[in-house]
Each structure stands twice: as C-alpha cells, then as structure tokens.
Length: 304
Image (tube, rainbow, N blue to C red):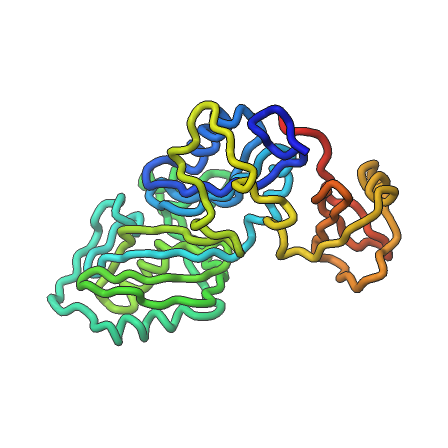
C-alpha cells in the first residue's frame, strides 16, 4: 500500500543512496525530504563529507527502526598516503609530520602489519570525530585546539586486504564492525610502519547485506523525484538479519494496541529483537518477554 506522497510505502521503506564526496549525510537527508516531499527521513549511519558510498535512508514510519540497521557491519574501500601524517588523519587536515626516512615499506611489510588488525582490537578514536565528550562532539573541541585523552574502544575487523600499492599510496578493503574509524586504521598503519600515514579516499560499499550497487545516484534526488517501485527496499528485506515471525491479523491487532501475544510454535531467543510481519508486510519489532511476544516498536500510519 502506498500514499500519494512520492509513492512511499505506507509503513515506510529504505532507500539506498550513493553519496558523493562533498555533501554531508545530513545534507543528503534534507535533499531527500525536499525531493520526496516527506518530512520523516533519516539515515542509519553517518558518512563524512570526505567519504562517498552507501548511505541507507529510512523513510516514513521506518525512521523508528534506525537502531536495528545502524549497528550492522560495514565494508569500505580506502586509500592511504604513506609518509605524511595529518591532525585529522585524512587529506582535509593539517600536516603534522613528514617521514624523514626516504625508504617506503614493501608490499609484504604492509600486508603483514594490516593482518595485525584482524579480529577484536582496541582503537583510539580520532580527535576530529563526532564522538561526544561531556555532551560535545570531539571535532568542536579539536577545532578550538583542545586535546582530550580518549579511551580506546573495541572494534572488530573481520577482513582487511591490500587491493593496490603504488608507492607512496596503498589501497585496501576492510570489513568491520559499526563504529570502526577507517581514518584511525590509516593512522595506526602508518605508526606500525614507522612512516606515518593519512587517508586520501574512503568509500563505503556495503552496510550488512545492502550494497552500493543497488543505490540510486544522489543527483537523482531532485524536486519531485519519484523512485521506481523496485528502488524501495522493503523493510522485511532491509531487516532480514533479524529473525522474522508472521502473525495472524488478530495477533497483529493486539500488538498494534500494545498488547502481548502467545509465543508462536517456533524457537525464539529471549533478548534479541524479532521482526513481525502481518498480511500487509513488515509490522514492527517485538521481543520475547515473560514467555510472550511483546511489542517493542510497531509501525502504524502513513509518512508525514
């Protein structure tokens, strides 16, 4: 079922956008709101203006489900320049150190150091980051010249490999957990190689199972743009990493009104979110509570 507002599915949907270098993630959200004439649009994970690639937008009531997509693993393609360090760990920053040694590492040396990032690691976030300290983003403090001792956070790198080496630039692909700073990986790679490094390009190619190959160009988000039906990503597909349960209309109606329903005849884990479907499609999120299926977030109503 759709509304008359840009053909948006009534319960909302996901829209994949290929963000170019330059605009902010929020800027693209504003553009999408104007283009689709829908106020309730949000994204599921920020890409810096410096970066390009997959930005997952949630439209209409689906904006309430952002937390169930923002934590998905990501894949990035990156390029780093060896021999020069900047204060932001990317090409936008001020050069703070240039390697004194003329020798650059070999490909074998780079691959060996990159392999050391595999698995669960402790990573110190960049000073220029959106991470908040005492309620204020770090980049605002950094712009004032303030330096804060940041505690390392645990991230997970499931795959990292060199895809090209043209000294002094190395390109690599990394599959990682949400919250991983690729700029920090470039910084730490430079430190391990004792030459310094900073990121010169970054592109996000996937979020969970969603890939940039199925994204629309940001240039398509013009006033009056109406996505083709196949460009909308159904919420059942977007959230297929969740266990899904289809319920009859009587149970769906009870969930819509905040009531719990008996557990279906299938094995469900207590704790993880569970996707609920009714006859019209994806209905919302529930959880096992007190041996019943209790509503957590139920979608109702058209986009506004």
